[in-house]
Image (cartoon, rainbow, N blue to C red; front, top):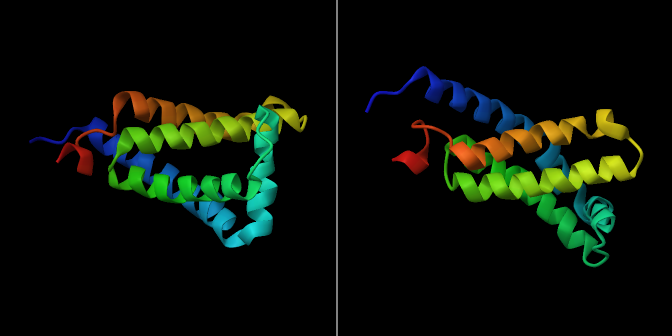
Length: 131
């Protein structure tokens, strides 16, 4: 099975996106502990969800960490991409609700676009899903 330049390009994108999401978003959330999880989970209030903020905050950290690792590996691509996209929807909504405008929400929107694209097209031949 011949690997294309497109497959290599997709691997580079998912490796860089995955590693930066883990290092700068997922792990810091997980390491922050219950106070951090609760603060992050309160973002769900922007969507009318006012219960279990600690669980939602912890879930965001898990999705950003484990979901990104799954993307890097190319395993369970679509479910991981969908969960990451939903997490970025909440992040974008939170930035907009805080009055950060599109410039404040742009990072989450950019990640959202990437995750939606991966959910639609998959990760290419250089992934465990394709083996």
